[in-house]
Image (cartoon, rainbow, N blue to C red):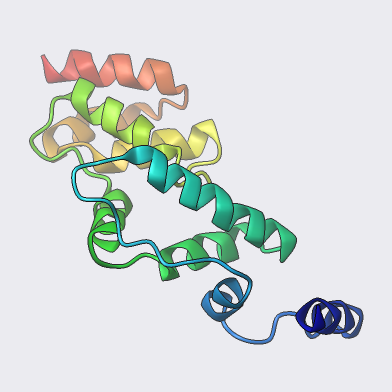
Length: 154
C-alpha cells in the first residue's frame, strides 16, 4: 500500500520516472525471463503479457517497453533476442524466413509496427543476393514483397 501511495505522490510531482526501466519493472512485480529449453511458447507469451500490463500501468513509451523487456531477458531468452534483433534469412528459404519473421514479429511490435517497417525489416534480413534484387523495387506491401522475394529466389 505504501508503494502505491508513493507512486501516486510521485505521479503528481512528476518524479515517477526515477530509476531505470528495469528497476521500475522489477519493483512492480515483473520477473526476469530465462527462456524455456525445448520451446513452450505459451510460457513466453504469458510472461510478456504480464510485463506489458505492468508497463501499461507505468505509462511506458514504446521505446521504454522495448528496452524494459530486453532488460529482463537472461540466458537462452537473451540469446533468442539477439537473433530476433538481427532478423536475417541465413540459410533458410524465403518461405521459411517469412514464417520465422512473422512468428517473431509478434514479440517486437514496437519495432515493426507498420507495414512499411515490416517490409524494410524483412528486406534488411534477406540474403545479400536477394536483397540487391528486391530492395530497389521499394515494395511496401508485405504480401507483394514476399511474392517478389520468392520469385527472385527461384
